[in-house]
Length: 212
Figure 1: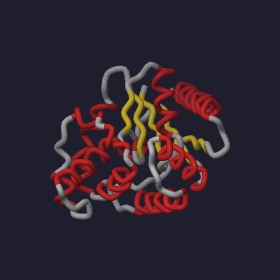
Figure 2: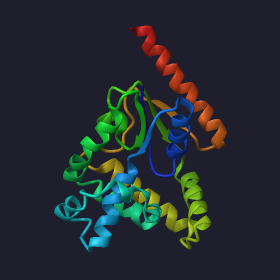
Figure 3: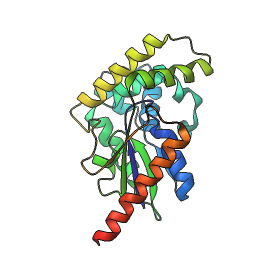
Figure 4: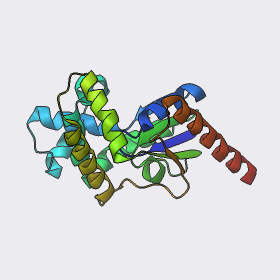
């Protein structure tokens, strides 16, 4: 079983995907970490994230980098949104994600284009959203917990800018798959969001089983 979880930054998709992985006992991949790894590599190599060739040069990173705490820094998240807009970067990471999705027994992946590009034939697809203000509040709280000093207005501006880049890029833009179920977490607790996610997945699985 493959479950695709897509949505914008700080919508709750990562929390939901991890909970689904635990519920269904499936391996989980946060595909955003791959782009953050490219961004971190670009920064450490002193390259230009706006230049596609520089970003592609940073795609050959080891899996060990995916556990680097620096990947969670907000400035790396912003850089990840920049490098992920390059078509050749997305192409370089495509097979890595597809291999993860195709492993025996299935998998759960979250990102921006899982249901549309990486696993278009997924057994279940969720598109997780929340209002920009709610997402900014969540991200601001996360940053404060890690000692960050960015203002809530700055965080909101960054989220709006990231949404514009992710939705406006020419290759694999952030868009809800036609057959995905929408989950708005704006006013839901984590527990309620996860319960709703499981219900939506089960409904999609039942629908597919009935059509066979």
